[in-house]
Amino acid sequence: MAYVNAAVRLRIHDYAMVSHPRLRSALTTLALYVLAAMLIGYFGINAYTGNHGLNARHALDQQFATLTAELQSVRAERNRWQRRINLLKADRLDPDMLDERARALLGMVDARDTVMLIKRP
Image (tube, rainbow, N blue to C red; front, side, top):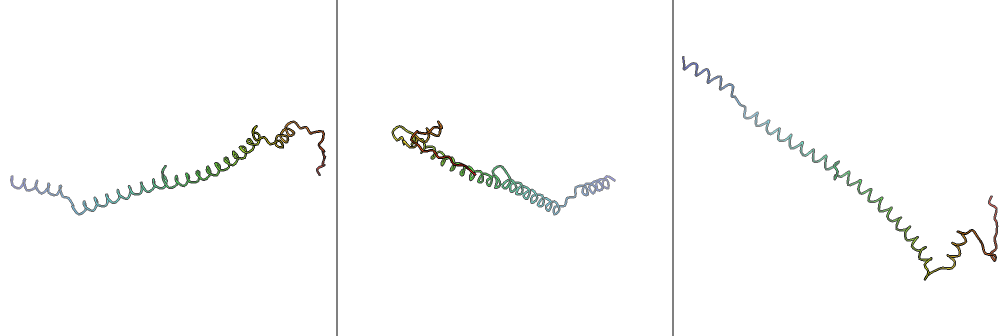
């Protein structure tokens, strides 16, 4: 009787511990492939849309082009003002420029000037 009980217990335990190595191997392989695909997808999406990705690079290039154009216009304006300032310096004073500015600011004319009034249509 003890022999039969031991045999029944052995058979029950054998069936309870059944493992399918092929199935387990296939599921493990599938899980690893899915995990690898998810990691590649995650890093791929971040490479395109992340803070340092391709979209951010494109936006920075556009901003760089805009700021470069603005810098060129500001430099040109600065050069225009620098030329005008140089004309008003004491060592290089242009009498015509001084006379023109004084007349424009004061709204006066010289007595020897001929003033012509033109009607605008």
